Structure formats: structure tokens, C-alpha cells
Image 1 (cartoon, rainbow, N blue to C red):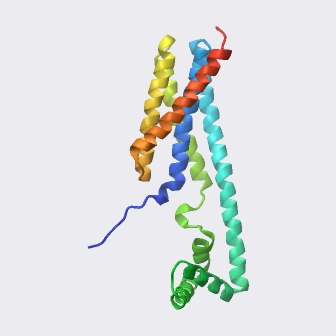
Image 2: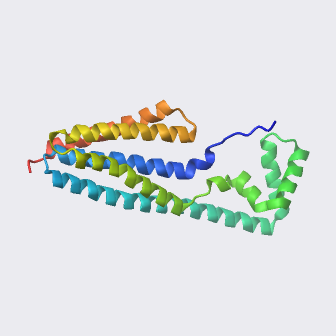
Length: 229
């Protein structure tokens, strides 16, 4: 009978960007709407502020993710170039270096040398990238994927409190936007935790707490500095 394990580490790249985008979309847009509403602004002004926050936030997330992950990708490429040059100049020393890595991980010296030689013959650069530098194919930086994932999920997340503000104008706007946004955050935290194999309850509580804090602080700023429109 075969034993298959369903690991989730290959999801780290896109899952991190997607959760960050959706969470930021809900929290920042809901906080912006609540803060402007707390300042007693007109309904049209509140919606305009929320829409502007959605567009600006999505572009900011895309640009930020792309630049950040591109920097990581550039570092990985530079390290791989250094390693490739070392392999071309002194293959034997690189084989010994790889064998020592395996010895430190628990293999006997003879076995470590045998494993190192076989892996070097199969894919020398790949072996050093994985076992010396810590770069694996499943965790390689992908700037475009991260940018689109983060911007897309930010837009979806921001659209939720914006839709609630559009549907429910008037004195109930703040409470409806806050309550619905906290529900969305709880669902997001739970789904993200499930996708990553973590505790659903902890994931939901963690995201909801910080979202509630952000909205409360923004509402306070709106009350303090707001003026009647």
C-alpha cells in the first residue's frame, strides 16, 4: 500500500500574497470608509473615498509585491550565478562541500560522499541550490504571480466593505460595514488557515482581532478630526 502525504508548503508563495492582499483590502477599505463616515461626510464622499482606496490599494499591493519578490528573485539568481561559477572552477571542492553538509545532517562519511557524487553527477547546481543555499523549485520567488495574486485578492477584499457601504447608507453604515467586514475577515482567516493546514479557529481570531483594532482606531481618528459636511 502506498503512503501519500499531502504537503502544503508549495502553496506558500501564492497563499501568502493572496491572504495579504485580501486581508489588506478588507481592513484598509473598511477602515477608510468607517473613518470618513465617522467624520460625518456625505454618502457620496464615503463611497468615493472607498473606491479611491480600492484602486490605489490594489495598485500599491501589486507594485509592492512585484518589487519585493523581484528583489528576492534577484538575490536567488545572484547566489546561483556564484555557485555555478564555483562549480566550473573547482568541481571537486564543491563535491566535498556537499558531502560535508550531508555529514552534518547525520550521514556517515562514506555514504555522504556517495550521495554527493551521485547528486553532483545528476544535477550539481540543483543539489547545491537546494542543500547549500536553501533554494527549491517549489519556493522560488515569482514576482508576477505574487503581484497579480495580491492585487486581485485586494480588489475582491476591498469590494466587500465598499458594497456594504453602498447598500446601507445613513446612520447604520458604520455598524454594518464594521460587522460585515469582521465576518469577512473571520472567513478569510479560517480559509487561509485551512489551505495552509493550520488551526482554523486561531487563523480566524488572529485576522479578526487586528482588523477590528484597525477599524476602531480609524473610527476614533474620524470622530476626533471630523467635521460635519
